[in-house]
Amino acid sequence: MTAFGHPLLIPGPDRQAFPNHYPTPALAYLGDSIYELFIRSLCLDPPRRIADYHRLVVEHVKAESQAKYLQNILVHLTPQELEIIRQGRNAATTGPKRVSAQIYQQATSLEALLGYLYISQPSRLTEILTLLQAEILLSDAATSAP
Image (cartoon, rainbow, N blue to C red):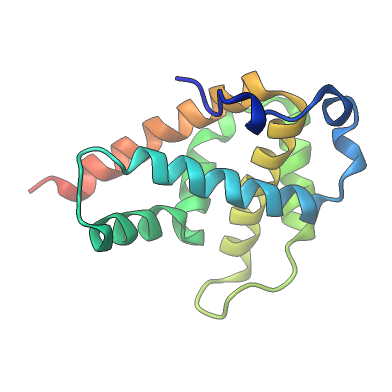
C-alpha cells in the first residue's frame, strides 16, 4: 500500500530535513487532513451513496475512534514517535464538549504523529497507515458482525 504516491503530495527534501521546525499544533493540523484523506480513500470500496460515505468517514475520523486506534498501535511506535505523541497530547488544549479532554488529546496526538511522519518519513507514514488500516478493518468487522 502506498500512502500518498503522487509526487505533488510528497513534501520536498527541504521540509523533510527540518520536521521539528513546525509547532506541534501545525503538525496536528496537517495530520488531520492526512488522516481524513486516508479514511476517505479506504471508504471508497465498495461504492456507496454519498450519505453512506459520509456516515462511514465520520465514524472513523471522530476523536473517539482516533484515540482507540492510537491505543492499539502504540506498541509499534518508536521512542521518537512516542515523543511526538507526548507533544501532541500536551499541545491539545480544548476540544469539543462532547468528548473528554483525554480522548481529544489522544486524537490530536495521532494527528500530530501523522503530520510529523508525512514531513519527515513518508515511508514510515505508510507503515503507520497500514497499521491503522488493519485496526479500522478489525473495527468494521466487529461492528458488522451479527
